[in-house]
Image (tube, rainbow, N blue to C red):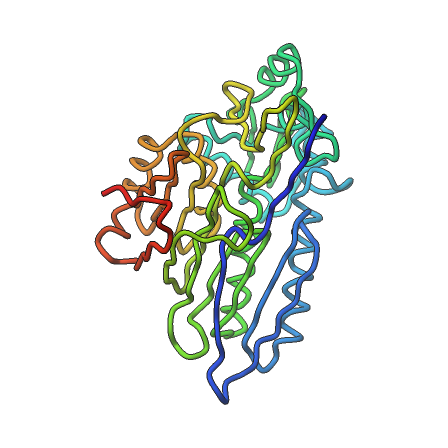
Length: 340
């Protein structure tokens, strides 16, 4: 008996109000990137901008998804040993994936496609693969075998490999949307790409956005803390996001390419806060796989990047930007303890 549960939105809760006389928000929700996308804009030309934003998302999905026939990623995967011409932004996306691969010494690896397929992650009927299947998949994973020729704008992989940019693409797309909002001089907007959040500008009244930190053991809408942000992204990786159950055991979607199994360490969730959503996306997975100690050490070595790490014993660990008050943090749950 298997139970499948997918939770890809409402990882973080947002509250906002419009002051009297200010532009009313335009909010739209659509299903793209295999998740729920919610965008809220405060601007007199909101409808036009909204349509352009969703068109940008569609355009990028059609390039980056390995599940869409004819996408640039699928063309690379279907032509091993051949340098495939791609657009500049696809090359940039892959380069970001390689950066996080180097940063994590291979724990983050965009060539993880064969392992994802073995587990059936992102499919209707995920399963626990045999050890032989896992070993076979692991042999075909190594981001160092992805070759980029920036001069010719081409990418090549070895036979048997499969690029999957799912652990960084939503953050990358979010940053592109934020750049578009800035070009259009939009002062206030919220982007939620399946849990990848960006608070663009401030609330219409000039105050910071109020963000709720999800209880990894609670239901949707259960929050343990509140933080306050502007012009920042928040991305969370946790054991509750996507998972399935088989023979009474839960298997989440964050796979360790070195073991071949879902990462089983002390962490329940990792939230990364940074002006770059690409950074948040890549580091949330990376730090989850690194574990509490090494993950927090990595965060403290980086500029303009903060983390909230919640362990399975319901303890909260904060990076220095929270401890020194740079980002306000308010605990609202008595079930959790902040470790100083």
